[in-house]
Image (cartoon, rainbow, N blue to C red; front, side):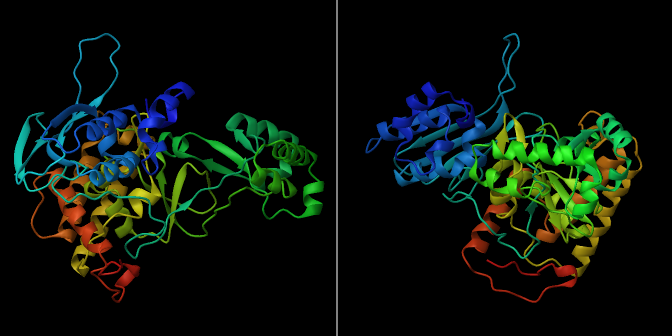
Length: 438
């Protein structure tokens, strides 16, 4: 059971095992077995091998679990990267597993088994295996409040905390406007991750700029405002009770005045790429969308590439099996290209625009349709492949043989950036730093 889905009895069962682990409340039952084993084999020559859910080597569990294990002297001796667990049971769950072997002592040569596209494993002899199961050092990626590179910061979307009183379906909006036609200019499109990805439509009352006399002239809106005030006053949250004093305003408001990027907070693990896209002003994005103002085609191209998607899969948390994009862990720690040339930046921009053009060729298809592995149009597949090559070349001239090699390179770059080895340099055009800031 994941940390967020355990009942009180299960939490009580796990608590004695994780009570000495920083942020141990993030850990699941699988992590408990690793901690028990690490404690059991202290100062022995015992080796342990577990078939495990891959949750302990990706996302938010990596830092609390492996920092604790490393502090106990644990070293990974061998590992198999993620592969699907095959079962003949009826109604079998979709489970992805890893195999990790470790001990309380080090060895000079470790064995890393990387799953290839044909489901076979390639064995690689390495000096060290990182907790993300790629060749690398014993370090973890934790939360960070600011990006390690000089790129736009991601903001959260709007959070109305309105009890649903300001939000309308298409039908509800039409019925409301029949009663209150003058409210039309205050009803704006409202997008969360689901609406953005699946082309669904919702609407929301956005009353930030309404004058008191205009508000009083629309009794149907007044009813909604009164309902929001009542809802907030009956909350158990003090911040929510506090904003009952301004019921026409949201708890969080974020309305960019120029074109901006949005990243869905949750996206299906079936997709090779998270659907990321540009939005125009005048749309109210919910807090289920991450907002990236001042983003350029270059930023879009890097973020929607295999390089960033691979980093995301290793470092982000999960909601059940879906990706839950973390700004603090994924985006703020992502190592952008160290020193991209003007030619490299332009190549990414051109390829990124072709991805957008390939999407636009199917105006009636949702992003869910466009990025479903079974229905993704060949033109969009080709556009992404070209973009991936352009992004790779911004990192180094040699191609990457696999995603594992990409991740090894990114983790090495991350270590360099966070070690403070680089200093500020002059920004290139469009505000992209040639050399990232530590």
